[in-house]
Image 1: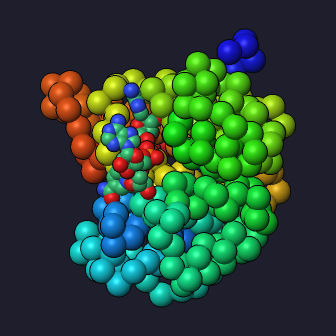
Image 2: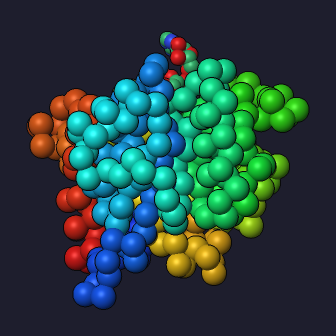
Length: 282
Ligand SMILES: NC(=O)C1=CN([C@@H]2O[C@H](COP(=O)(O)OP(=O)(O)OC[C@H]3O[C@@H](n4cnc5c(N)ncnc54)[C@H](O)[C@@H]3O)[C@@H](O)[C@H]2O)[C@@H](O)CC1
Ligand SMILES: Nc1ncnc2c1ncn2[C@@H]1O[C@H](COP(=O)(O)OP(=O)(O)O)[C@@H](O)[C@H]1O
């Protein structure tokens, strides 16, 4: 890694947390559209929706299979399941790209054609390149290896593990999107050369579903900052680094609450409001 990567700090993150004002209503604060989860992975939808609500968005609209909608509403009845206008999208978590139905593919393509910022995760990563607005992809090592290899840039997991910064940059350049490469250190960069690292403060984060939580945090931040993003696409990279920072700090707090012990993904989502509140108060 060269010296041009900068570690994102609490002060940096604090610049990207906005408290609602007296003039705001739910729409002014931003609506996040979410297309995640499947009958195979309903939990991924629940986790992303939960994290988005807890990050402080105006509204979450969720679209997914009937059983998954029911699971989302059981946990979060404030979620809206009627289609409508949104200011940002989170798509792909908990979706197997090999098992996408015609209807689901249509929903994913609609999100990508909607001209608002998009977080592309997991089962929608292969659709990168068809976007119409600032887009951030959120792969882990295996997903990045698969994504690049499918784009005729053959690379193995171990090669990326040996140089995650270099491969994240290469992916941003080749794919023309911001990249958030997940791991114990998360690498966030864009084709313009903005490069940030976020070092996780606890390794208890390495557990199933925490990536789905990260997607919800990031989606909510994009929706909240939709006006800024419409005139300043570079804000996307700062927001992605902020999401990773909030996620790590939420995990640290959740673990600290159990004497430094283990946490599950939902614990991370539940700790997010405390992190947002702390940042808003700085
Ligand atoms: N509660 C949920 O619904 C969760 C859903 N998830 C979703 O699950 C899907 C697959 O995500 P992954 O990050 O697992 O995808 P990966 O690309 O890392 O792994 C794909 C598959 O490889 C296998 N595999 C890889 N390494 C393995 C190992 N060391 N030991 C055993 N099996 C291994 C697993 O069968 C896994 O399903 C994504 O869509 C993701 O969003 C996960 O986020 C976990 C939680
Ligand atoms: N060893 C580790 N230490 C700290 N954080 C980690 C470690 N490994 C992974 N993470 C973080 O945990 C999350 C895992 O996300 P992901 O791989 O998408 O899992 P899932 O698909 O199960 O949600 C990411 O935010 C990643 O940065």
